[in-house]
Image 1: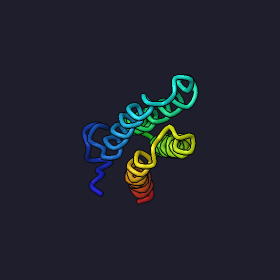
Image 2 (image 1 turned 90 degrees about the horizontal axis):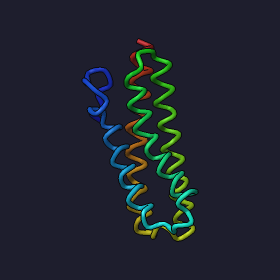
Image 3 (image 1 turned 60 degrees about the vertical axis):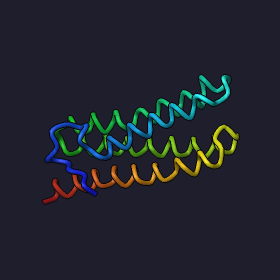
Length: 128
């Protein structure tokens, strides 16, 4: 997948981080159209969780311990799944159109694959 865990110079080089930041921007854009009465509930939750993905990838990258790295990457994955679940809810509430929903779902899959590559790479590096 091209994700270079140990040969990168900074977290911005990680494909997983790049996908995560783009996903967060998309979530911010999509939630602008949500009803104003959702601003402090679903909109806020989706924005916080989506920005948490890239933030935890960056923090994990900066950690030197194997277990710490894994923990932050796993938290990023959990935040990704949280946002994905919120998208299902938003679609059922008709805050997202079916087209918007169908457009965003593959982004969750690709980002999750990249995070899983990071997790696997860290485990393999530590176990070898």
